[in-house]
Length: 262
Ligand code: PEP
Image (cartoon, rainbow, N blue to C red; front, side, top):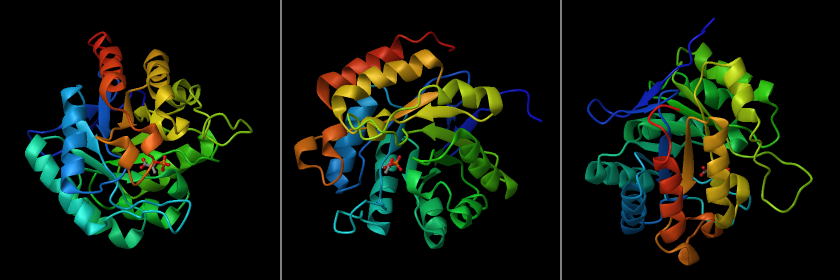
């Protein structure tokens, strides 16, 4: 029922960033918010490289319950202060329907992570939150199931949904997950929603982030979202996949080489 591909606008009036077919949106920031200084440094690195929007997790759904779980509301406050300092809209994950209101109060876009793609109560809650949603693909979800998850959000009146391919579980152990690059054009043929790629969480290692970002660009994705950390060796979460220095510059260069309209 929607022949034209959609553009989703993220951010407060005057700071709005488009995600959609007429642009390529470069989103970057720390995997987890660890401190105000670490977040600001990571986001400044991202901004210097050309990112227009920042990411950062305040609630971290980790495989191990003993791993760093995020700073919660304190992390949201840090994200809001870094947005104030940089002018960049923020996307951050919400993992519990009870936290949707407080996350929506501090962030410009609500992220549903891979582990919660089929948490229908949470999808319905973000569908009513009045903020755009970044819906990651469940790591064991088919494309059809992922699109139906988006319908749960849309059904509650929120059509500002951006899909994010972040890798799926296969038998191949060389990467954390297998980036299903073919999902991008398939989704674009079935849905009007923008689709971006997260090469950091797919690969789990930084050396693959730039090549996979180039693949995302080549296949026609509407943007990428990548992890950046000023001191990856000290990161509390996913340090091995965080970009810095030369890798970040090489990703920025690939993004800059895109024609104005892709
Ligand atoms: C994240 O983006 O911080 C994250 C945990 O991603 P995913 O849900 O794709 O693993």
